[in-house]
Length: 418
Ligand SMILES: Cc1cc2nc3c(=O)[nH]c(=O)nc-3n(C[C@H](O)[C@H](O)[C@H](O)COP(=O)(O)OP(=O)(O)OC[C@H]3O[C@@H](n4cnc5c(N)ncnc54)[C@H](O)[C@@H]3O)c2cc1C
Image (tube, rainbow, N blue to C red; front, side, top):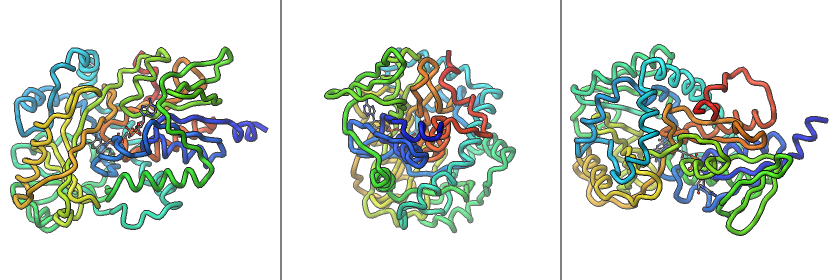
């Protein structure tokens, strides 16, 4: 009987990025009626389109490390480094920055590492469940990911390598020779590296998202291209979504709008300190043959992934909010860094700015709202939202279906900030 009620429940999911689409698929699998709402075509320009395409189950060591605070001034002064500020946004971001600093201690770092590991470890099997139902041939490669560095940077890597060893994550230290054997086209500036052999990469994140979305529609899901303005609740707690043009009633709704989620959570009176780390990409078309797998050059904090669109050069953490225009300087920085590793590169294409959704403790929010029983959240997956799409969807769909789990989900609660 209870099962029948669940089956008839209607769920509205706001946001058709990788989080919203994977969640919608897992909800459909459980028998819910699902309507996905997005102001844009799925994956047209969102973070889920422009990311580096890494499936990174190893990446549980967070940014809130104690040593990061001493590195920040150096990073900000370097024109080649990954960190940048939009100064007009800094005053607005001070509360987030203060909360981030509070999280930069060993205890909090290890807490984040443990609970990121809990979901990262399940991330690939969760995708495989979805990929079993679509044709991803040629779209996902399983060749691992290489990080490399020059001598200078080795020390700061030691912490990450140690924690990953403690968590039982597969990693293989590489000599310069081994790096050259794996990726012979990179200029030989490196002194060491590490291969994460279990990592995979997407050859075209947008195509994968589109295939998952098509499967959702094929399985009876609905899509509404609408801009959500407001969420209200009826006197008995049923959510009502107001878009530019329409009203929608659902039994339960989910906010999965990536970095834009805060615009909606603020309205429902839950003060969640979500902000964005802006990142960029450019393509060097026709140059994807230069690499077999993604690489990350740690000294300059950027990466390159061979994709269908060409060699995608990705990086930068720019603290600057959602409304500032893109920075030409950051694009130039990426282009110059790419040419440093591959001097043969010439003209780049497709300058793109995207928004990582980031909370100051570097854990996502997955679960119910603190204030409204029929409202759920899935956002804040920062640098790992592509990797975590399927597992977050699977976990949240299980919560909505009121299923039991052996996982400890309390660290992902929205209420942890109040
Ligand atoms: C440069 C860069 C590189 C990255 N590389 C990687 C990587 O290699 N691996 C990895 O795991 N992660 C990576 N990430 C992170 C990852 O891309 C994001 O965490 C993830 O895509 C977030 O997915 P999402 O579905 O939460 O949000 P999004 O992809 O941002 O989707 C949110 C959706 O909500 C919609 N929306 C917003 N507001 C409204 C509204 N009011 N009404 C209707 N619709 C709305 C938007 O149109 C959008 O479609 C990277 C991110 C960046 C920026």
